[in-house]
Length: 139
Image (cartoon, rainbow, N blue to C red; front, side, top):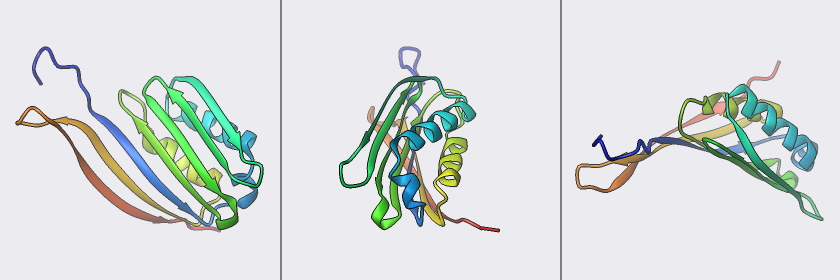
């Protein structure tokens, strides 16, 4: 990295959550609590938050952290949620991802990790992509 360049590396987790508890996915207050706990466990500094409950069902939520953001959009009728965790710095984003998946009582998740902000030889920025599935084992 050149001396005049600020480190731009960040990790963006894009998660498809399947088989989650519909009651949790419908509850903006509960999702707020889950997000705030996840941020704390992952050593993230929360700056702002917004949680919106749609009149029919579903929640869209975001917390802004010093390190970037955590967001979710839910479809309780399908037991599905789209979760994003994007961080840079010293936090532990995987800790937040797995905590949220557990608290949503998901049966399955597809996780993609994108390493973003990689400065390339041609003076452009690029990213690298890694993806895996997690079948959640229930006792």
